[in-house]
Image 1 (cartoon, one colour):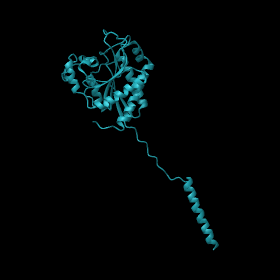
Image 2 (image 1 turned 60 degrees about the horizontal axis):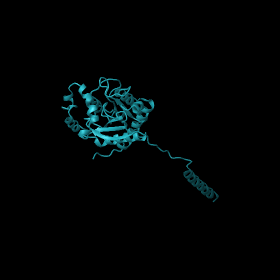
Image 3 (image 1 turned 120 degrees about the vertical axis):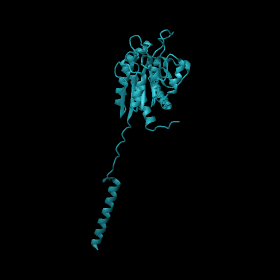
Image 4 (image 1 turned 45 degrees about the vertical axis):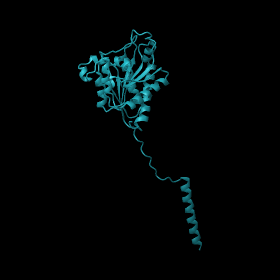
Length: 279
């Protein structure tokens, strides 16, 4: 009889000890934390506008081709620091001439996710108020209005420096306004995504206090045949002395670079991680 009592007491002790351990967590079941999902790789082609024999427009002391290159190189470095698993490809890393069609071909061959062309804006030298016009604007491929192709005319002018340009651009002549129809027919199938990226870039510029000239569509040869979202961003007016100083200053360059980097990050999070279907 005493033995049975002792046995029952031991059983009760074991039961309450087990209950205590299970409720206080003194013994932890082995748990497995799933490995973090690696960030989806993203390939970004950065195109520094113009270059070499194509100097394009200039300000008081600097040329568009040089400003565009310095910003593009700094942007590539910043992207690789801030965006995990990002691969950056440059269309040029030095002062060389690259035909417009080859720039987008570089992106297509790389199966890039994004193409961003960096440029400086300018007003014609004979235009009143030339040095006062300021602000930023970003373009996507499209027809736009026939009478509002001023940027396209300027940016496409380098086609005349290329050999066999009529063959390369299917008869396009940058001196013939009607031939803009040819480029508009080449526009890529990523219009919605391109506009989204352009809008995000503009929003970042505005957050830094820049004058917003909007997102626009024009018949730009460098964006024609793009197999990915593609934009051309005008980071400021080199014909405006204040904006020329801003784009050439380390502080201004850093701000522009950060604006575009943040826009790419937002685009990646919104469109590449959980992309919406094309309409």
